[in-house]
Length: 149
Image 1: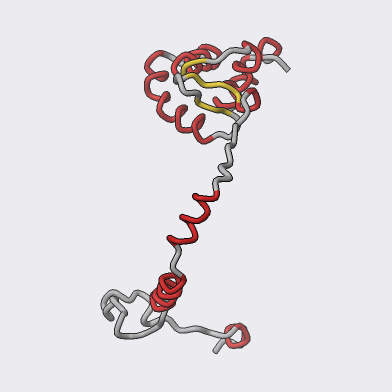
Image 2: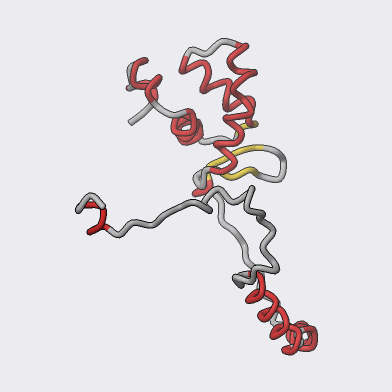
């Protein structure tokens, strides 16, 4: 479905990122964030003041939406139009450096420190009785509750 086929009510009911997706798809070109949101605002009928107020929120939505990608030159496009190049370095020197940097004794000490963080020792308890909101909590079993006890 194209934007021109939608009614104004349908466009206003859509999210801004969905409208932006349709704009980028139909125009088949990359756009700066403010240019893209200006197009969204025209379609939805937002004023210039609303454009300025809502642009940061639109940027947050677009930057976290997996359908969009920001290119090096500040232009935005659909992620499906771009591929990611992954380069794996099979250099043996890199592997040797990694093996040398890892010390198993250090890893074991870290594990022991983590276990100590979650212990129930009263000595490590930073809460005083005044800070403990649950000190007067009473646990009632389900059958006690139904019997009125």
